[in-house]
Length: 161
Image (cartoon, rainbow, N blue to C red; front, side, top):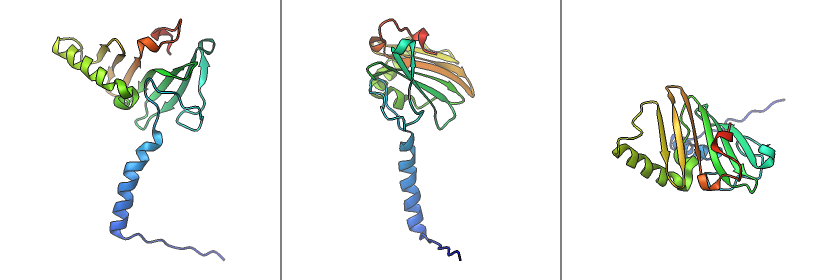
């Protein structure tokens, strides 16, 4: 014999539950930002990292909520030094850039004021501590961001697939 129970949630409780879920659910796709340490546990987005370039670089890949493939690159010490992306939406750049987001915004504003980076489909912001290249057309975006001073010896941005 099967017994089923119905749980009723009052309307005001349902609203509170919905609000709590809206706040908590985006946190499930959290990841480290540039300069942070790559999570050691393979249970996060993308699973276990893959070694590249004779072990000098580790890459972890995941697909974000917008369907964009995001590659996270870390040195052999685990420090994240770059991200690349390709997909139908631009990833959450402030989340990827972390502490370097202010540098990116300052460089973008300065470039725009100087008449640079006004291409409709591509932009490049180069600061001493950060480089961000992004471009594409609607539903087809590509880009990469890296920390020039954190690139492992012998690794160039062109080495990041």
